[in-house]
Structure formats: structure tokens, C-alpha cells
Amino acid sequence: AKLHANVTACAAKHGVRIEPGLTQSWPAAQCDPALLDHLDRAAESAGQGPLPRLPSGAGHDAAVFAEAGIPTAMIFIRNEGGSHTPDEHMEIADFMAGVAILASYLSGSNG
Image 1 (cartoon, rainbow, N blue to C red):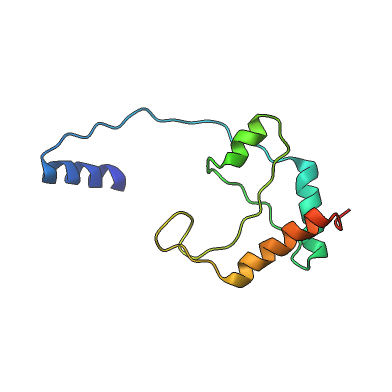
Image 2 (tube, rainbow, N blue to C red):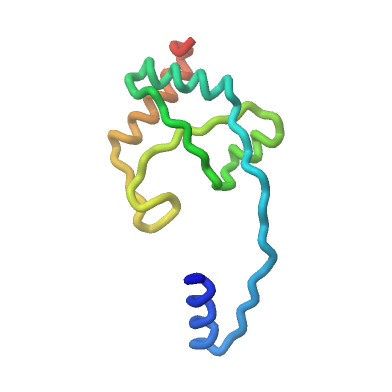
């Protein structure tokens, strides 16, 4: 409702007509359970676990890979202000925690 009100006000202010397009929707892509288990073990090995399992509605490249049958998972890094915004900010310690999980996974020390 707020978005509609803002769009309507903006259109009136600038003397234009704005017509919303079609709504797009698609089912959530599923991460690979075995890969998620490996990342959990990698996080434990890196002293960062256990990891929460977070759903993401974003259309990341990972979703395209998952839909193509490529085992897929994501490591999210906490950031202030949300993702893809001018106010996005992540602490280097949080970034390095994600790097430690990835490094543990890649080294194979996670079983």
C-alpha cells in the first residue's frame, strides 16, 4: 500500500502515468542437503558453527545453479543495512568468519 501511494504521488508530481507490470513469481530454489551438511561441519571445524539455515527469496545465481541440478548452497555474511543498498556495511570479522567456513570446506577438513 505504501509503495502504491508513493508511486501514485510521484506520478502526479511529475505529470506522468505509471502502470505496474506483470507480477513475477517462482518457487524457491532448494539448496543441496549434503552440501549444507558439509558446510555445517566446515563451520564447526572453523569454530563458527552451528550455522542457522536461512531461507532467501533472492534470485541469486545460486538459484539458477540449483534449478539446473548443480549442488548449491550459500554462506551468508551478516551486514548492517541489508544487502545491495548504499547503507550496506559488513564488519571484517564477519567476512573473515565466512572465509574461514569456506576455507575449511575447501580444505576437506570437514568430513
